[in-house]
Amino acid sequence: MSELVTGEAVALELRPARLPSRALAVLLDLVVAVAVYIAVSIGLFAATSSLDEAAQIAVSIASFILVLVGAPIAVETLSHGRSLGKLACGLRVVRDDGGPIRFRHALVRGAIGVIEILLTFGVVACIASLVSARGRRLGDVFAGTLVVRERVPQARSGFVPPPPPWLAGRFSGLDLSAVPDGLWLAIRQYLTRMQQLDPQVGWAMAERLATDLAARTGTPAPQGVPPAAYLAAVVQERQAREARRAFASGPAADRASASGWPQPAPRPAPTPGAYGPPAAQPTVEPPPAPGHTPPPPSVPHEEPSDGRRGTGFVPPA
Image (cartoon, rainbow, N blue to C red; front, side, top):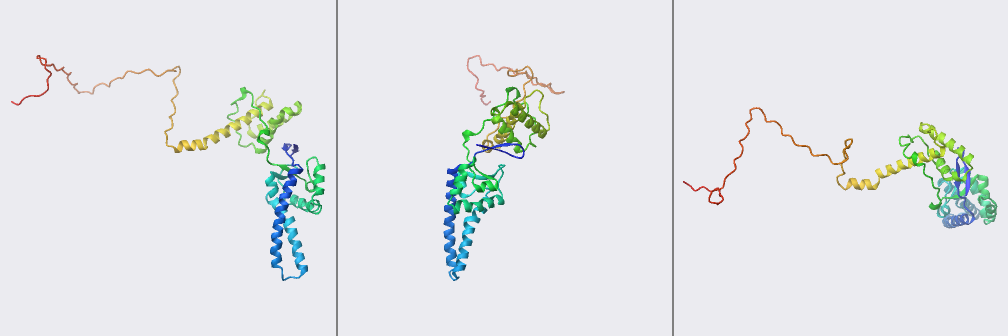
């Protein structure tokens, strides 16, 4: 693993590519380039058959330079450091400060690669890569570039330690919209590696990061809170907000809204001191309106004395 320090004094952990993976990527690129060169040469030979021999040789040299030198330079420039072979092997060309390469970097790498790869069959490039501490060939040294591995195993990713329990939820009202991604990356890398740093150096880095974070949020750090704990608490608050935002607009919420099921209504706030179900209140009838005569009370119907129940039938007179 290699540490690169950017202009903002942020240490980046990059994994330089070693000789076997780089050799495999170059071999794949050469196979593709040679296949394209053969196809182009056949087409040009058929198109320039009427020309003299000198013109055919000039066209052949031009196609060689264009396909085997110009095409890799153009591909690395447009893809920001990834060719077909590097893409298959999970590699990428970056600058010494970790940024993406530009045309001048790809041009220097391609021009020197003609000498150390094509003309010497890769012998010079292999020796330079074995001697270099970060596996760089001469083209990387002169161009100021580095080939790194993009595919990092997930299990090796750093673990951000949780903040103290007494800081949980303390920064829920903090405005984090003005904090740039570079500062978040620096804070996360510090938290994952603070156990490996010297205590004094780690404390100084934490204070500097906490000062930058407080300046971005517009709220000073609380007094008496260690800088590392403050950073961990703010990072946890940011992760909690992102999780809530993801769950609020995720597929689960969409399925719940599209299913048509009624959502539970919010419960009313209980009155102070009442924890059980509310007691039933007696119903009070409204007073009668003025001038309204109440109906007479109903008289119970007596059954006949002979013991037979009345049927309600009256014979005609």
